[in-house]
Image (cartoon, rainbow, N blue to C red; front, side):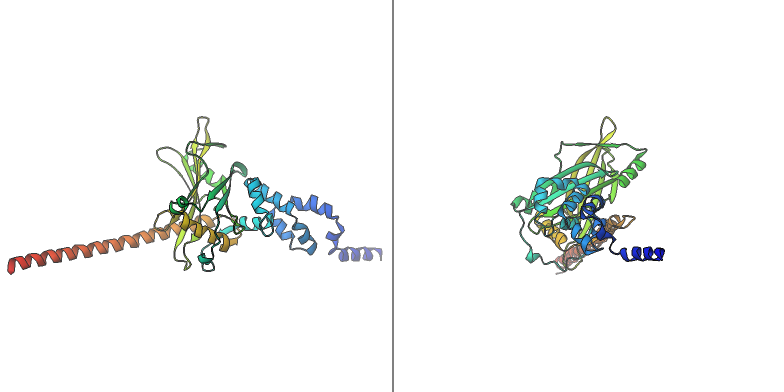
Length: 340
């Protein structure tokens, strides 16, 4: 009888076991050990855990651990204005951005913003090697009319890293592709939204044949119009060069917007696309093989190639028409002169 009573008590108490744990233990010894996705899942388990998981301190610490750049006081102040603070910021910035269509976004309803803020972190084997926050003014005539470009380093500035040359050329490039990751979060203070525009892992890695510098390209492909026929590449470049000690130094960290014709968009055009992606872009979980970014990049390159070939065919056809027209006019003129 005693055994049956004990079993029944355990069975009945299973659902209430979380309630038997002191809230301080849950908050300080359990929830603080979870990462962002796990904490979000735990919040769905019960109303009690949902309430505990809404604590801003938890999400602030998770954001700071995931992206050290957001610990900047300026960024922290902006995140505090988000609807749910750091929790909203995490849900915006942690998933991959998928903005393949802008049909649900109306540029005429664009909320003017005086600046965009970039919070950038570069990791090598999970260890932070570069972190910076950059503010970009968006209301100046220079920004709106000039090609859009965000540079985080001055031309002569370099950042040392612990990365050393590994094996031959191909092996070294493969090593960087597998171990270097980039997070580039763009924050729109006016709309209180953010998005991580990086593909996380490089979509291409190459070495310059003359200087020997290594260029790692990260990219997110976005819709360029509401019909979904035009796409643009939000490309981020990390350039590294060797040093006398054998380590690689980061020489360039930049972002630009490129259209399918190969031209770079100006600030005004880029701002509309970026705000549309931040506001209406879907967030999705990264796959285990982490190949989405590279696959989308290859699709974009293929679309660029097809667009270029169509343009060349039209130009060749137009050239032939012009030549034929010129020859016809030339023959008609001399026929008129000789046989009048």
